Length: 310
Image (cartoon, rainbow, N blue to C red; front, top):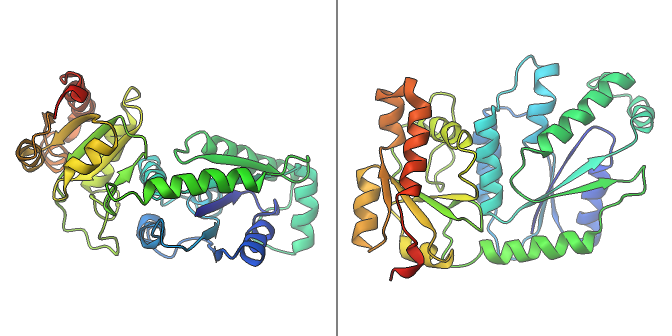
């Protein structure tokens, strides 16, 4: 299982994480501000987790805090919304779940003062703002989220969390879902493209490389975020065996981004819509991102019911 704990300071994240470590045998990791780009640092950790390998992992903080804390304490977040989407889809692909730890703001303030930690501002309005930002961030989440509030007697039911996390882990460990997959475990649209980038990164298994503010990964995720009708999607590397995952997801609609992906899909007998590669779109049509998003959605709509095929 993969469980990520997010939330304001002094809301019980570390206490819950250590409980999972001591009483349930989880491997425990705690993270603060990233030393390098968040996707290089944290994405590689998600990559290293293997569903079904017998290891349960709990992460005390991850990417949510970069959106919440960084603008107020470091001037700017290194993680933008497309990057957040990338991280959430990576966690989805690994079957991860998130627990959002919350609390009564006045009690949070008491605990923060007792911690004697100079990092967090010790005033009620500021702590309430952080709590509100965490709720706003929760609304952007893709992986399942459970809410835990010890102060108000709304503690999370760990049996329910474990049940969902274990089911998602089994789904993520299915042989049809290889380690390069990025996205929903219930995808209704598969987006297929080849990996084209010279970005230096620790991440080598996902179909798009390390995320940076100038790369094709950013451009694609930003484009996908602007297609509200897209729903649950997955991104697949064209250099993998595509038939198993297509059949596993009950033959969803498929869009090829570029010639390589289209040729691969044709060779494997999978009907698909086609539009251009994000690297081409970024380089030659950078000011036409909305049109690129429309071309992806039109490629989805161009398909008939693929369940009747093969």
